[in-house]
Every structure is written in structure tokens, then in C-alpha cells.
Length: 276
Ligand code: UTP
Image (cartoon, rainbow, N blue to C red; front, top):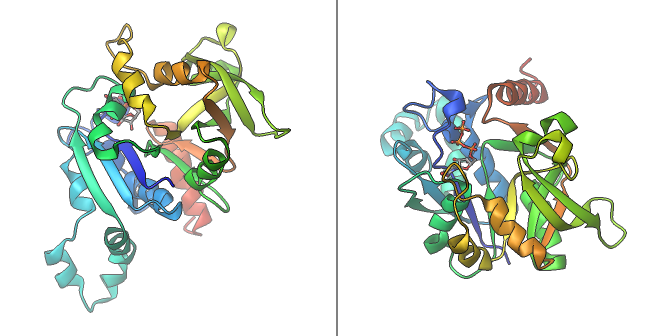
């Protein structure tokens, strides 16, 4: 059973400055809903109710969003606007939120390691809320839990990207397993390779199921040349033991950490809801 989902949300969000100077990137809205809420809804729809959030300085709006707002609620109570808060109140009722602060922004791997006290010794999901995913049926985390249940090892979500974009992602090499066309046993991973040296065009996106041995591996990973601890390096250790499955998820992903993806997501959801 995967019971907990970790949300690393301590990054500076420099691509969205100045908007992210005082507002966490994860609280930027697509239509009226913050990115973080989409992520939490995806975890909830996969049966996960324990949301573990890695925050940092200037991120208190995330905690406030997932808490009751008595004054606002009593103001709106009985009015036509009460329905605007219905979904978020439901989420708050169903979920438990725990928080830990990453004191220094030393990369995604370090942020995940910072979440260890909230997760403990059990497999867990990871959602990077700025990768917003939309699926026709099951959400990406639900799809990945099915894969985890079959293989009982770490699972990473992948997507094919144009070869000239490989330098933006972690890229995997792997072999299809069990006659599937979407599930690979990972043999290698390279962080942000140039097109010439990329082992494939299969890019890791912001969804993971990790087994808890990842924490001890992360403790042994040395920082890269930018002083950051990369989750890809820790996953590579597991991959060398044949313990990482890459899964080509069914659905669409938008990189809402950048302006282009953010606009695409806004247009996509506005069209889907008949607003434009
Ligand atoms: P990004 O690479 O998108 O970094 O991190 P960022 O700082 O948020 O954004 P830019 O590139 O400066 O615009 C991927 C995810 O990892 C988290 C971020 O919050 C984001 O969800 N992260 C990254 C941390 O929690 N801590 C870190 O030290 C780095």
C-alpha cells in the first residue's frame, strides 16, 4: 500500500520571478486552482490521504491553503459564493498534511531526503506539482501504483520528448518488460544530456514511486558541480541493481514551472471547461 505522497516544494521558482518573489510557485493558479491543489487531488484520487510537503522560506501560503479559513468561510456561508470553497474544504477534510522545511535549497534529491522524517520506512509517491498532468481516466500516480504493485520496486514516470529537448530532463535507457509497450526496466540514466550523448528521448517527469532505501542511497550521493544532490544519481544506484521501472504514463503533462507550459495548461483547461 502506498499511503503517503511527498511534495518537494521548496525550490525558488526563478523562472517565474518576480511573481515567485513572495508567492510560492506551487500556488500559482491554472484557472482558479493552485498547482499544488491539482497535485494533492491526484494523490487523493490514488487513495493516498497523507500529504507530506517539503517547504522552505516564503512558502507559508501552502500551509494556509490547506487549512480552514474560518473568517472567510463564515463570511461566505449561506451565499452563492459558498460553492467556490467546496472542493478545497473536501480535500482538507479527507487529508492529513505534514510539513518539513528544507533549510538549504540543495536540489531535488536533498529535498526528498529532507522528507524522510515524514515518510519513514515505507514506499511512497512523489509529486512535483509544477508538472501538471491531466488524464482521461486514472491519474498518473494511480497508474504508477498499479505498476509498483506488480514490480515492487521504484517506478518513475517517463514521456517521449523531442531529441533537441533532452538537455532539460533526466533521460533513461531501458528495455521493455513483459511484452508491454509502456514499461521498461531501467539500465541507465543521465541527467540533462546533450542530444548527441542522450541514450534515448525518454524523459523523467515529476512523478515517482520510491522505495525507502532511496533515503540511505541519497545520504551517500555527492553533490554535483552546482552543489545539488540529484535524485537521478540515487535512482541510478537502484537501477544498477535492476530495481527501477520506467513507465510511459497515459495522459498529458504540462511543465508549469515555465511560462510556455503554464500558458499551454491554462488554455487547455480553459477549453476543457468551455471557458474559451
Ligand atoms: P526545479 O528544477 O523546477 O527548481 O525543481 P525550482 O527552483 O523550483 O524552479 P526554477 O528552475 O528556479 O524556476 C523541481 C522541483 O523540486 C523542488 C521544486 O520546488 C520543484 O517542485 N525543489 C528543488 C526543492 O524542493 N528543493 C530544491 O532544493 C530544489
